[in-house]
Image 1 (tube, rainbow, N blue to C red):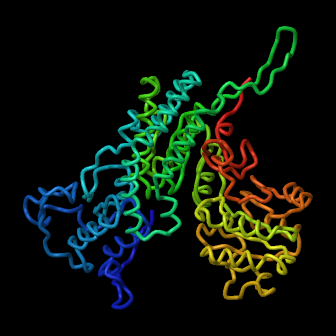
Image 2 (spheres, helix red, strand yellow):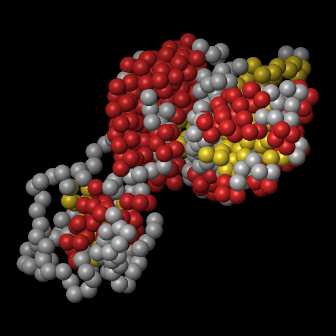
Image 3 (cartoon, rainbow, N blue to C red):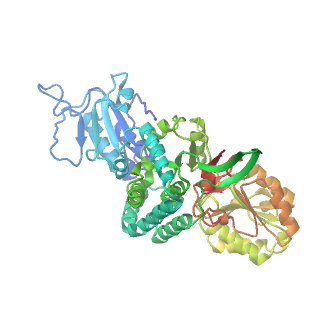
Length: 553
């Protein structure tokens, strides 16, 4: 919540403003700020109780509690503005319409004389006038879960349905997953249509290209998702796997077996293709699931969620309800869920450092996560030049927005006389923008104009840091100082050097002569992944079905 408090009205200057950013009063300024922040709600305070059907000084004037722009039978007449300020009620109505145009879901106009107005508005108490495009109707996600009236009810439903899921045989759960995979293929057109709505919205709001890339669904992605789910369905039964058996005494045997964790809460950003991956892992592992996707993918997520839970319900013959996977649609619900440590057993945030930090700071529930994907590629003095070029280009350009894309290339200083120039040339030819570390500039490999702002940046696009190190120990030190313990790789033809690197580097994945992009649950043969963990407890690296189990005796 960000308050805008200004004693005098602010107005835009005459130069440097686009048509969309011109404002003549505080209300217009507030609508612009709300748009650029991606706010869900804008609250405009005034000196009357809200929007009236006629000037409030006239007899019979009545407040309009709800104004829906797409409903034509609501009319009102505005009188003269007050002596204070520039805009009056007309400015507030215009700003409300402007905010709705750019994606703000609701605008409330209420009296600033009410000292509890903020609390009243955000506790759903009828206060002032609310402006929306149309009357709120249940979303596809909300109607799919019969008990989604509260966060606790969703969590309880997920646990209840998970216990039903666990009563299915391995073959029956496998068949459910096969049905989910086929449902994705059969409903590809619906998924693409929903995704097109999300893409149109983010392009209007001029978001970063990397986010658009993560948001975009394609038919190839849908097929990859379906194939991954089928791979999961064909895996050995993960529940009840015997991990150990001990005879404690004559006739007294102790057996250690795998069991589902319980209810998982997964918060993810931008990538709607994460939803069916995460859902399929939970189905195979027998866990209940609550999902919160990014607002920018709300149409895609709603469509994917409906398709998945409908397939589960149908394929299980109604024995597993749609509540097995709940879709959370607002940030407030996430805040409430993070307090439910008695109902939710594990939280997995998939997103940037800010998201991970917020989750960790606001819950007592165990958290499985990684903060950044600052991956390094170290090209050793004994590297094969052609192999170094191939691995560098693939690691950076295959999918630059992914967390396992290489962000820093470390060159042994001996490569200055061998493959360094060739590697950089190949990267430039692949449209990669190169940023320079201090030694790369000092040795003339790049110029001072290319200097990087930091040695620890996750670019998420076709930008890559290049630095020169004196030896492998210097490379390892750089990785430990500036990396995120995600994925690191050495390119060398010396197996002893590779072994030393892999033993010394502290990261979830440490590769030899392989692209960092290989750090992926699907490529690992896991079928899918719920995320990549850079922590050191419970699970590390790509987390598949095994990472969603604990054990019991």
